[in-house]
Length: 418
Image (cartoon, rainbow, N blue to C red):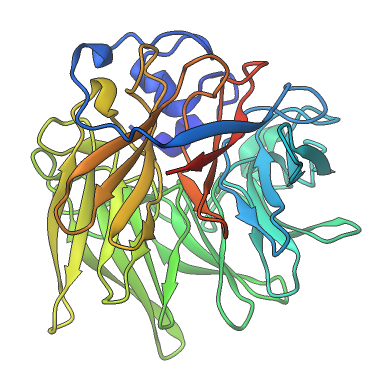
């Protein structure tokens, strides 16, 4: 099942992973057996607090977004719906002495040529603008009146559409964040479209020219670009596909320039349970070049995993499952990109945890694979379903979002201190 296809639907209030887990309402209980299993570990001194609860009105709703921070501690992200025209926003949160933080809507999407329903958040480009994507809107004729999505740049004075997808070979419905190289070229993926209708990796130059870096075939190269950011290292792009590969369980890939063209190499093809399967988040890397990520399915219990691809002297990679989620209080079905802090990996699960199965914050040792549950969502108004993981702040805290929950059931921005 393509996660990215479901993410484009704003009718599922609790979002994709909640939908797959049987969620019915933002504050409702999941229908799975998650609460029946024991907790693996818990951190006694960790604390989570909600910095802002979205109302679903002019301030936005459904914060299916990663967060970025500037040098002053302000946080930036997107909401899928809400805003002046109900088609989503770009927002800024300014720190206050105590919650709630002050929210400013920087842009209201107008639903048409400027884009509709942004997912995944924004990235600072080399000029300090905020760049991102929308899953619909724009001028693509192949997607009917909804449009095929856009890449946008938000300056202090206006929003500029850098590329409007047309729904053919250039892909459509991007719905994820973007990555920049030193020359200011922008890179991202789409879950659909392309020559084989399996998604693409695309590039948009500073001159607003779009190029196709790779068209997924659905074969050994994988299919369906993920929700996570592409990782740029030493001039190459690293990422994952949700499906395809030799075992139809997704892949990890590397794309490198060869003369004037790009070449994709599959670094690993997931095999499915007891191996990992279906990675939805992006990749994290350590100083040795080892790669880490999460998968929605697979692992020993089939409920998702944390995996490592260890780099060897010959340039290849060896995969191991660091941790297999058990469901229940332990959490399940992660869709997040991991954050590496010291020898530990921090992330979120989209399901499991407390009685409502609203997700968790976890820590996994990058060496031993030992896991600790740091927070279970769904208690009161602390939020529900944290899909996009965590962003590390300069004060040692982590920041993230939930797509539901909060005081109005429309999602939150939260702070977590281990």
